[in-house]
Image (cartoon, rainbow, N blue to C red; front, side, top):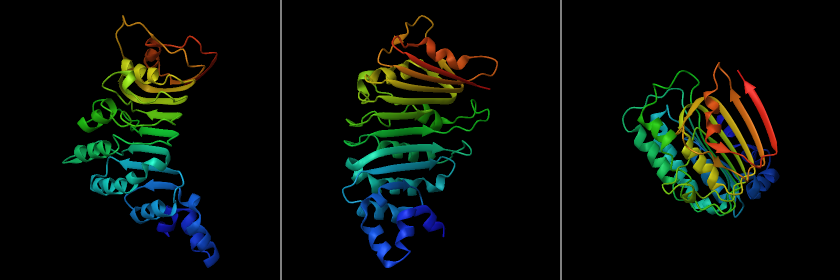
Length: 277
């Protein structure tokens, strides 16, 4: 059934026979992967209870086109917030079939962001913050809520993450009001930055990279996007980076590579470049 397909292996095993049921219900690791959705309240409660003291992986997908589901998403997120000390991996992903949201849509989205604003995550090792933008010509279509998500990002800024080593960001840059020192990513050693579209301030991206003082591996994926910075600005040096993977889309011009005018990699000894059309 659709319910079984959502809850995964743990529930399926529990329906085979009594022996496997007891085994499935008592094995904490089988309940350590929690997907937050509008249909998963009972599953979230079961995972929180049966995972015991084990570390857990939490994923949250929010469809910006489905306004009636927003409050249920907020309620579902509230169920996992008491377990933040056990989060090992966290993925927050926004997606949309369209960008029209009327009524209180933006307010509910901001409520989600505010709920995840100040988290104590002592065991978090990997985080993904992503905003999937439709590939159509959207530049003139982005409403205020999307501008908020894209350029005024606060999720992650106030986290306590002493074990965070891997960070993936897509069309999303956490921005600390106090510059790079305000961002909590000092121990991040691997980062993926993916910009598929829109215009981005290079200084904010540079601040995020500077905050990762132990960053050694950087992957840049640059789509149909461009970057804004002062032509007289001096490139910011990122000496910790040893390996750089650069993937960019070439459509007759290379505006996406303007980001490289704002940063420098003086100690990079491993460079790979992939060009897509």
